[in-house]
Image 1 (cartoon, rainbow, N blue to C red):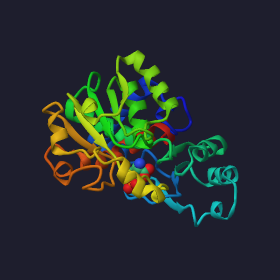
Image 2 (cartoon, protein in one colour):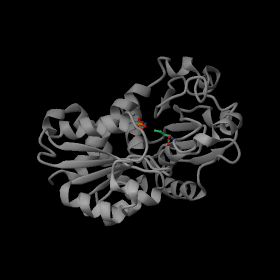
Image 3 (cartoon, rainbow, N blue to C red):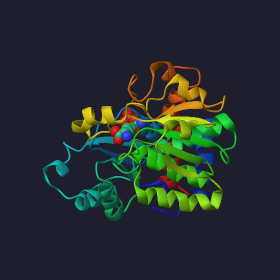
Length: 307
Ligand code: CP
Ligand code: NVA
């Protein structure tokens, strides 16, 4: 990869993203070939928000590559007492070979990338979740062989996960239709960026209001929580706004018969997805969770591994 960091899908070219997924397939199939890939290297993992998958998959993944990962909570670091991100980035760069961070504002991850002399990986910001999108398209690629020409429908909040799916889908030739209630759509600049990349791959990027319009004929229906981390005070209002946006069995029937159900997890059964859908044979939610490990190992090998 040309970029030092992996902060957004926008940081990688179409060719780099395709190569990353190929690498992830190889890492998954031949883990033994990567046991020394990060030998003697350390990854600092900064978490300003909770996590199950990101923390465990990065920690286990680093260990499987022969390296060592340190968990650093935002409240324990001096950042919590006002030390700047710029200083933290420069200090951690003197001890560690890479930094993975989960932050609130996307500007914080960009600031880390700007000042760190080692690679910085975005483990989720309010704007994007690129590691999740990499794992999700790896999951679809395993199921369907080829990604180009597939159609993914995203129903729910136009949030960080939706943004990364649009950006990655556009680059991989997967059409992405997002259905959100008014006022909860994806950011215009992300839609424009995805639409511009999509011109090169033939994908179609669409934002609609009616879930039925987005899901008809889809190869994957994806949803995420209605209330993301940091939005807890809006929970009641969001529950009202998103009524009618639950992925139900009836909605799944409007899609292609081979359609899979996708969710980045954690899921709230009975809110954004019906339990019978999340736990149906069409659901690939635990494959997505597993593929976080393989996709992120590939990202670390590309950014931190010896070339
Ligand atoms: N999907 C995801 O990032 O999960 P965690 O919040 O558990 O890391
Ligand atoms: N949109 C969710 C994703 C969690 C993995 C959030 O930001 O909380």
